[in-house]
Length: 194
Image (cartoon, rainbow, N blue to C red; front, side):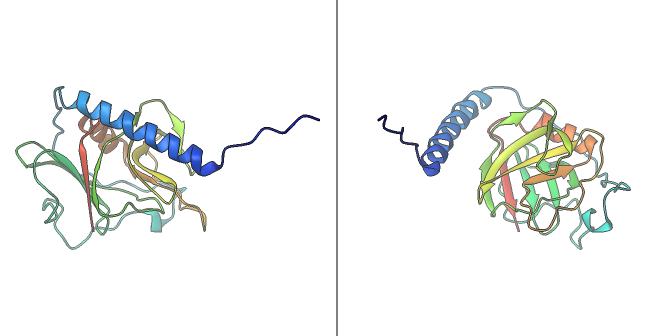
């Protein structure tokens, strides 16, 4: 009688894959640090909702002026993402904001802290909400959900997440997503603030 093969527990697979991904990001960060750094142009367009999205998916302007980078967001070249303002700033090496824009966050927010840009995915894929997306920039994970910036191929705002659905996609409009893609080379720090 043959003996059934033992299966590795899921935690072993997750641990192995996570360790491999961290090693790959570290190698890519070292390589990226040796290349040139693009600079984005300063603009502040607001994403426009589509007929498929409800008004609750549209980020609302906050009291803080959009051109003021949040205190405690670090120094030097970086991406700053404010959870309370649903806003991103692209900060150049001279510590000047070059572009800022509002975003549509997913249902899972990253914890405040600093994360390096990890994997970047150029090909068009389908997001966790079923929307076709591109320029995917992964930088964090929380509760088993990968968190990344992206934008819809058709430029639409994301539909509201179904109740209980965990999504980590932080969506931008198409122009901002393209600028973010050019700015966010592998290893670029993403500073998440409240």
